[in-house]
Length: 136
Image (cartoon, rainbow, N blue to C red; front, side, top):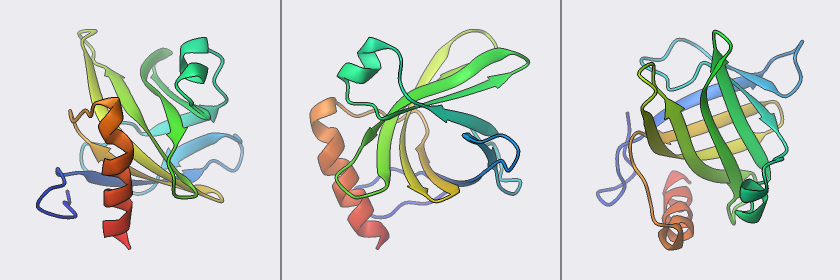
């Protein structure tokens, strides 16, 4: 777990690599502790509400044929960065939202996962810009 400054909440960093035999599917790299997802598929949004929110991609993952997490990924100002609210569906069908920042480059994706952290829409871009600037 990490934090980039006193004003930034703790986050977990996860790395994913594109599956060589399943284009558009990304698998978790390594064996980190308690990852929210182990793999995901990226596709273009079909749901109108995601398109209206500005999503360029949709992330979805399943376990045992049941969708367990999803989010629309909206482009941030910095090239290659996207953000969204990862909706995780737990075994008891309760949902948890966690803010995520994605960095897509070639065949890899870095995920900054802010467990159970949410932001009002007006605060998202300033938060992301500050967070990305602290990564450099």
